[in-house]
Length: 92
Picture 1 (cartoon, one colour):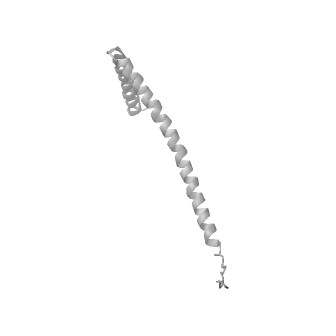
Picture 2 (picture 1 turned 135 degrees about the vertical axis):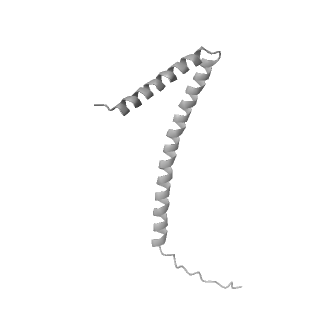
Picture 3 (picture 1 turned 60 degrees about the vertical axis):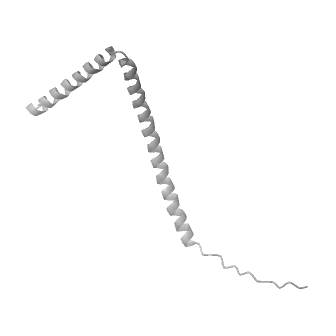
């Protein structure tokens, strides 16, 4: 059973949604309004696409960080090669 507060919050949200729909319908009636709405929708689509790409970049950054840690650990465990070079005297 919904309390009075919950019911009033639903009423407010419903009223806001109705006002938003009304504002959008009025906007389409204005000269150039439909074009503006199309631009807003295109912008929203581009932002969504960009956010998807950024999530992909985040995953790649995490993988690179993990690989860098593994490489650093491998470098620590490797012992430097101890090769000595002998200098040769030129005979002549």
